[in-house]
Image (cartoon, rainbow, N blue to C red):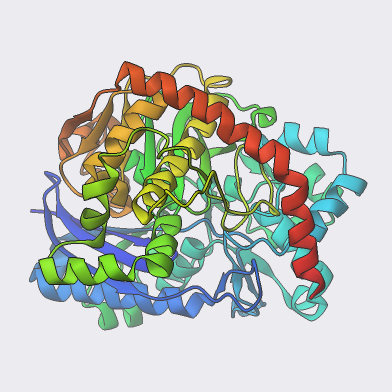
Length: 514
């Protein structure tokens, strides 16, 4: 029997699984860590944190499984949206923390690009737009604000590329991660863009020349790493990709029409297309499956589950204590009353822009907002409003996607932590109008990594086979009356942002003056 290992390096933890050729998970492991936020709206991590977590997870999996190392056919590692990537010197030693996807410090570089670059041409080349989310704006921030780092930088490496290098000694970037950098990648030619790099003042040489498919073998595991991990030297290490795309693959998204919402710390809703249009405000990159033809297009909210966690941590100490006494989750305690409230939480609307916002509004200065409060409202009203606000953000992205998708299936698959909540699944069905399906098994990026690892070594050939690895379950049907009310509330959600956008920006600017 052959086995594969899939590992995902996430924002707050690294998770891994060992799976057999039939898609059965034998063992798993994880390691947690935190994000550095040294200043408001900054978010960074040192790559050694990711490497140490990956090494620990791999070693734990091998040890716990008891599987003969000769039977482990391959390993694949995906990672978070790498933002700037890791600036490394000529010896490939990191020079600076990685400015990850949620970092918003590059607002000044966004303005520079607007003023000095032909953005219409840039968007045409890359299929993506302009925001401090994108890696190329963060690279420009390092160029402007950390000249010594810039002077000594040989490459900018996505997180999974850096870890793959440490495991194999080989430097390569998968097409999915390359496309997610944004302004330096030609989405049509599937290559770094000489013209875009020249327009931005980013040397093309800083982008590693070897571009590979996500299911391509980067190299064999180095002997010294193999000894530390309990794996065989030469074990194939597979490229991997951006974790949102890998998790989407894990949920069976392999053809146009399929679409999935992943709701964890952040929210991503994505689908497969064969063309891009940056005007619709979504993010596009080559898919991890069939990357030279298929494009993964997605929209996302920066703080989804993070908004829920923030609310509970700041306002729900009583419910946390009650949950502890009852032996249940705090979410269960809050939902007992929140689920009885009518759609709209009796006149509350929440905008989940707690770290600015990505698509489709692309506003680093947007702030979280709760509108409609009165003395009547309780924490349960606010909790429901938070869930609804995140779901409105999902719908906002879906509406943008409808304008550019070849087609969308008439059902929505939801994965991630939100899928544990029956109440939230019903809200999603009622807001979007889609029947909601979830997956009985716990499907996350490591499962998609296992698929890529198996495909790389010929254990499986057809992408459709991944659908045999999980079981879809119908969770919620949209209620017509609730859907009608939510449509009206969604219009209010959009108009609130438009009406107070200027005030949000003024508050942001005043904070920056302090």
